[in-house]
Structures are given as C-alpha cells and as structure tokens.
Image (tube, rainbow over all chains, first blue to last red):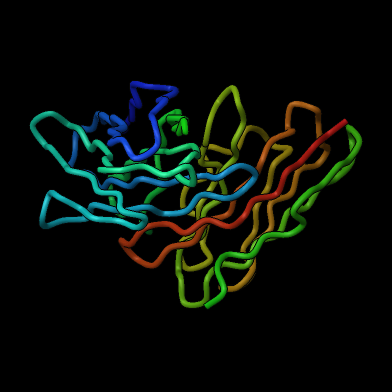
Length: 115
Length: 112
C-alpha cells in the first residue's frame, strides 16, 4: 500500500514570490506521481505527472516538480505565483500507473496568494 | 475534445431515497474510477473498472453502494438507501493505460 503526506495544510505566499509545496510518499514498490489542482467548486485538474525518465517534470501554468527517490519526495514549485494560483493542490501516487490502479491522495495544501 | 462528463452536478435528496450518479468517460479511455471527497476523509477511491470490468471495489463503504459500467462510454454509481453521511462530492475519472487520470467536474450530493 502507498501513502502520501503533504506537510503543509496551508501555504500563504505574496504575489510574484516563489513557492514550494511539499509532498512525501511511502511505498514498497516503484511509483508514479502526480500533482492535481482544484479550484473552488471545480474538479481536479492535472498539473503534471512523473511516469519515468527525467526526474524534473514541467507542467502547466509554470509549475514544475522534482522526483527524489532517495528522499521519497515530489515537491511542487513555481518561481513566481499569481493571484489566479489560489487553489487546493493535491499530490497523488499510484503503484502501477494512472490507468491500472487507483490513486492515493494526500490531504491537500491550500495555496493562498496575498497581494 | 470533451472531458469526463458527470451528471447531475448537484443532487439534493432525503434520507432513504435512491440516488444515481452518472459518468461518461473520455472517449478511448479504458479505465474508469469513482472517488468521493469529504472534508473529514479527503479524496477516497471507491471503485475502478478496467475495460468495463470492476477490478477493485474495496473502497465501497457498504452494500448500499453499487456501481456498474454496462459499456465503455457510461458508468453509474448508485446509493440505495441514501443516508446523511453519504453527503460528499463524488468524482469520476478516466484514464488510458499508464497515463494520468482525468477527472470530471463532480456531483455534489446532499442527503437531508
């Protein structure tokens, strides 16, 4: 079984500042990793995914994440945030790929952008 | 291309009534997932199908919940009878092989 820990339930950041949202996972097997964003009263939108290959993954809206196997982490970063980035961010893990297994989600991190 | 479609978007019902949630996956996707989101428990996998066959329903809370996928383009999640603790947002997601899952907009269920 897998588990995901998002260490921060809320992260306040000033507009145009950089941000890092932390995600650590636990698994006895190799994993596939995902970040999703949820805007108020909407569904989950895929930000980026790590399936294999380069450990630095670039996604939509200027976000990127780095897979670190030794630290079992998959932190999400953005160099300069905008008001429109205010949302809930979820890290998720799958043992056998997105289509072959259910996702295990973290509790989410609420990113609050302050003007 | 159309994304995952869910209906209804909102459902308000009284305790004891039957509720049916519907999902149309992305065309060509061969896996379909039902999740539930609550403040207390976050996002939980309820059941998933691969090529219309249920693979893992261990997340279904109890016998009041059932799900079907009669063909590649349609799935239902039924709750009978419904209870107030079933109030949540229910998401459907679809995927192709090892790629990511793509989520629908969700159905917000309120059981009074």
